[in-house]
View 1 (cartoon, rainbow, N blue to C red):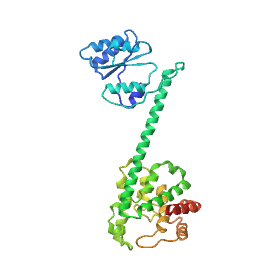
View 2 (view 1 turned 180 degrees about the vertical axis):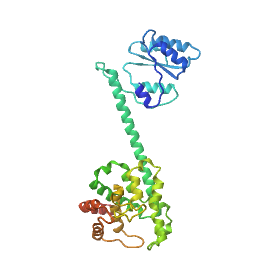
View 3 (view 1 turned 90 degrees about the vertical axis):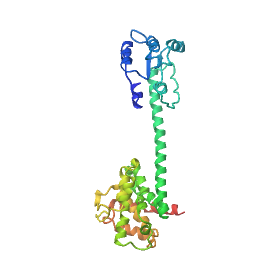
View 4 (view 1 turned 45 degrees about the horizontal axis):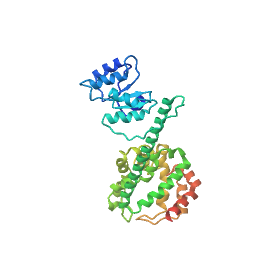
Length: 340
């Protein structure tokens, strides 16, 4: 009972006998009293009657626990108890009663009683409770996960409204990066923030003026410095979102760093650059080169692939370039599928 109640922050004061319980109630009047019928010395029934007859304790709710199925309702009524549970009982069912009497409501399906010939029915009941709590937690996680995905969709949609090419770019580069990450380091897929980082890498561009973001020609030095701020703006925008903490937020800030240290915003070099950002840099460059930009036309796939290979050890992590060479046919199929 304590394990179940502590998990949902219900404060418990325990007593090993009616005398101890009487003292505890006098010291700190509880919302609910849970009593076993059979207790050392005086019975729980006697204490229940006493509490219901007392001026200070008459309104205190009482739940009786009894091992006798026959006459349990009559016994509870005679004792003045507000509810009863017969053993073996589900601690979750008891929690529902206690919270309801204490003014809180919890939707909890009833747990099927174990067979009468079970070796330890109370332990079996508790095990079923744990399984039910686990299933409820899994369901809650799925709800939160769906909310996260909606948040990502809303943010990418907001960016696409500024730059019409961004939405489809995010889809392509996300799938490229997932393919490369799985090849370079499969454990990256265990960090769910990574995929969100792939999708939201350019979200900081929401804060870049349209005159720069949509300029049809090359940027001048001041405009370029402003454009480069999108990595920092993106990290600042997303830093308060817990599900992005980890490699995902690193992708947003560091996807324009270079292996040789000449990237931005921090000039990181080599393995100081987070791995997911190194992976994404190749995916992002591939998509940038193979699609039209306001200031230049797209390159052919073969030319872009040659450029990535030539930048191994300069702009790009050699291990990621090797993964690109290995998975190039799969990456090309991704592009064709999205275009279709």
